[in-house]
Image (tube, rainbow over all chains, first blue to last red; front, top):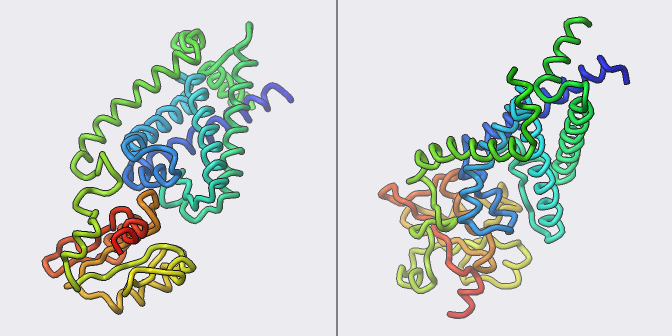
Length: 162
Length: 153
């Protein structure tokens, strides 16, 4: 793919992924008790842990979303998002296999009516985007290329040229 | 240049910084919600009742079965009304027809580990806004659910 086109695509994907996680985090920060119930519905963790995670995870999502959006602690943000999405996909599949009627809770009340198939599709698309960003950044961070925030700034420069 | 420093920092180190940073607002939010959340159990102690306690309440109790319809039809607590999340919209009006503020609602599901009774109780409180004559909570969850009730039958 043409380098400039790839940079623009890279920038757009970073904006979308960062934006989605900030949105998802903010929605859950506003209703931590509802999110605690959603985690508890998976029947994988005791309530004492579910409720504490419900307070912590949304902020982690927001910080990682900001990291991806701004380019500061970029790879660390991608690493955590990768882990979060993977854990969530596994938890969803296990819960479904156990016959639990779960609500993913990914976007608070807004996701209550999403079917399991849609949850999973959305998660796999997000996972693919995060992996794409990780690999693109890795390629660009090799000797002679920019990385993280620099890569984003670089792509911004390309935008101007375009 | 800030970016060069970012590039040199390993992904794991960056992740650890983010993980640590996220604790700060979490702490603030937890302090803000400290009295609004039940930290030790999904239900606060005042929302759960034992079979013995319900029996002491006498007749002004409305047993509410939150299990699937098939399980309710197979067997249920005498006088119980079916109200589950599968058919919430259809069953809620029937439930409300029989409820009055002088009645305490006790919701049960299959066992201690099920969540259906807690969810139905929550929806009765928050969506149907059930309260007694003094404006206090009148919806409770049966500790141990149907299994516990069977032991005392």
